[in-house]
Image: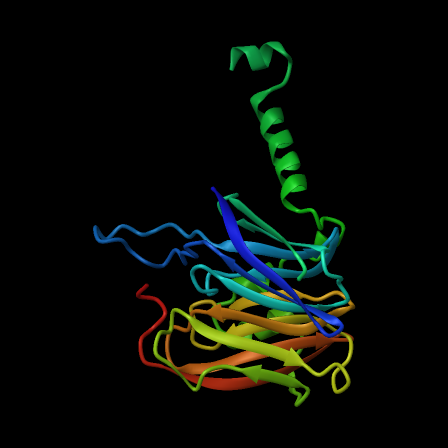
Length: 103
Length: 158
């Protein structure tokens, strides 16, 4: 399941602000469905923000991050037109990726 | 399967390659991905246990600005923001977010390379009214700031 990411990167002074919205259920594994069967855990475990090829942030997540996670970060530098990417992997081997250019 | 075996590559060998290639494709920042996931801290079921797994007991530091809602109507989506003043607290390399009363208090941990401002916005689940902690690691020391968030609807019901 490759998830798409809504992502925006905007220059703010000498900083670049990145905002990303991922689509993911972020199931904790502690909930049960209507039949009473446990819903298996399914959540993003690793998320990285990259400016070009350079990582500017790496997050390790647990299931307590909300469903359809939002992430906002800022890093130094970055010019208009530079590529910013967000990639994630989840505990079931799924991946997601989003790319944008700095405005 | 027979054709694969005929080429002399076992199913296990295939799987291994698939995993290696998959990991290589999925982690473009793999040079830096050497920063390991703090499994012990994520597995902890109590706040003290999680903090112990992260190292020392953090000291309160005013250089950490931690913003959470006083009252969250929906515990499943609680917006939080952590900002560290780099003059008051320089060289922060890691920020962790903990929710005291969650089944696993550690919600997220962020590795921050030099050049990235310590500024994180995200949303977490908060099971019930409790304190939220932002813990920053700088030069091997742990610092924190905490805030209480009241939850009127728990974060576990979906």
